[in-house]
Amino acid sequence: MREISSKDITKAVKDLCVDANYNLGEDVQDALRKAYEKEESPVSKATLKQIIDNFEIAKQGEFPICQDTGFGVFFVEMGDQVIIKGNNLFDAINEGVRQGYTDGYLRKSILADPIERKNTGDNTPAVIHLDVVKGDKLKIIIAPKGGGSENMSEVKMMKPADGVEGVKEFVIDKVKRSGSNPCPPIVVGVGIGGTFEKCAEMAKRALLRTIGSKHSNPFYAKLEEELLEKVNKLGIGAQGFGGTQTALAVFVETYPCHIASFPAAVNINCHAARHKEVIL
Amino acid sequence: MAQKKITTPLTDEVVKDLKAGDDVLISGPIYTARDAAHKRMVELLDKGEKLPFDIKGHLIYYAGPSPTRPGNVIGSAGPTTSGRMNKYAPRILEAGSKGMIGKGEMSGGVQEALKKHTGVYMAAVGGAAALIAKSVVKNELVAWEELGAEAIKKLTVKDFPAIVVQDCHGGNLYQEGVKKYQRT
Image 1 (tube, each protein chain N blue to C red):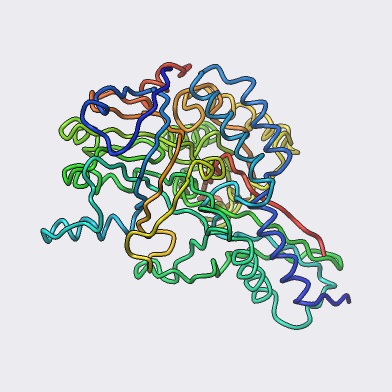
Image 2 (image 1 turned 45 degrees about the horizontal axis):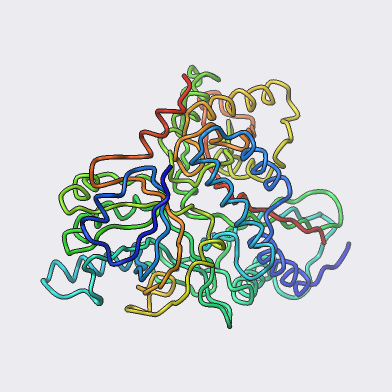
């Protein structure tokens, strides 16, 4: 067994919160630069220029990429040989969020109660997805999620008879209806299969993929490619001003499902497709 | 794509000259308000009471900036999704505002209200929050500090970059732009 101190987890999470909100991933930066080159609409091209200038300013460490520094969403893979000393894992992560969002001058966007709507003041609690894997390492991924794009997400319990064509129709229609709201150019996460909640989680997890990567299954790799092409034909463009570059990527994740079920989920990320990881 | 420089407060003449698709640089004071502040403003108007600032001719900026670092004027300050304010915008225009700045298409009677009250809706680039922050030269609290990022603030801006998306003549860049680039 390997011991990891909860203090080290808190410190790592604090740094992740800041890093994710100030430094956009290289893959996203490259994809936005390519979109700028390819965009045919002058208005959307000028918009992409602002988006590129913006992430360059953010890198200097004074202004976060977006004022909506998001809900702290975490994916944690804990090795079965790991023992955490000190605080428990979730408390250690939440303490890291508290410190990261305060010291990093990040916006606190979390309300303690959805009806009463009073701010918790420190951006906690985080949403934490925990998996146990083999080994003696602890992998922590943060994906701060903004409200604008999150609001444009949906789970649909389709019928098995709807098939892959039904999924395509659902995804394209969802992106079309979302239009300008999720801050395009977007990244589209699609979950297919599993149960209601598993499907939604997969759609979110899909957003962690590196832009440019392909699904390991050739059928789904082709589906991702086809969906991306169709989304870009919608004409939404950067910020919905009209254009050819509506999405940077479409990523699909799947899971076995019940004989009676065929769930599909779409989770959309804005162009500030933030995620960072650390392995302890 | 014409570029126009405008200074707030706006007159009807200036608003009428702004057309969907125009590139605009805004200077002068603008007021931030989002979900919670709008709820309170409309409650005041319903009771026949005064708003906490003189709204005549002014623009409302749908934004909740990130915290300000010591030595800076403001934190990152991009627009939030305007559609959440669809319900409130016609009342605010009726009260004398000349328009709003946000992101994403507005519906539910907003286009009609822009026409009726000669208002304009402009979009700032969502997620260009660090860039936009550079155009803010002064940042003063106006009301409801307890709302945190949602408090009403008076931002004095210089050459704040925006695009006219819905104008007082019925023009709508979101619809016209998408139609132009749609390939089916």
